[in-house]
Image (cartoon, rainbow, N blue to C red; front, side, top):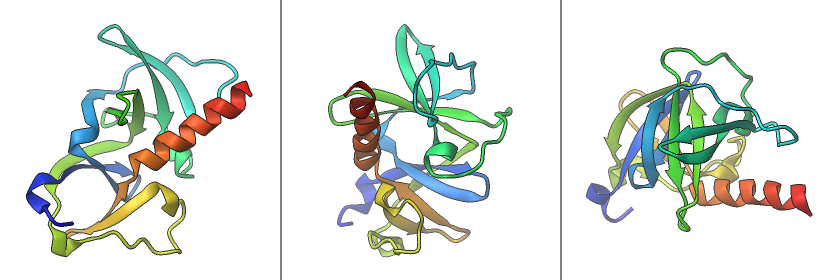
Amino acid sequence: MSESTDYRIISLNLGREYYGINLFDIISIIRYTNVTRVPLTSDIFLGIINVRGLIIPVVSLRRFLGFPDVPADDESRIVIVHDEDNQEIAFLADRVNDVIAVESDKYSDEVSDSIENRKFIKGILRTDDSLISILDLDSIFKYIGSIKENRYA
């Protein structure tokens, strides 16, 4: 990481695990709202939501990363992100925490082979309290796109 001042993440929780998403990839963060289930979709898809007239698919980050389901509560948040083509998708997270500046001396883009789903992790950020796995949205969007393509092939 050469420019730590230009790189900030939003940290979020899935249980006791911390994950991060690049702040510039986030469109908005909203409180959990009812999600309309769509039949015959992959289990990682919770359904769709209507946000300001846009229909956005919602992915369970828990299911996507292999965690067991827990019911949504008052701390649950829906994080709406976009890819390089400005396609939008939403992730359900247990909790959204803080904006954190990524300092190059605390960031490593070497992800251990022992980390499950490491293909979706672009790096690890060390903070005073924890390790934060930075999500690789490009890989996640490609994977989700492949699910859609296989569904309609």
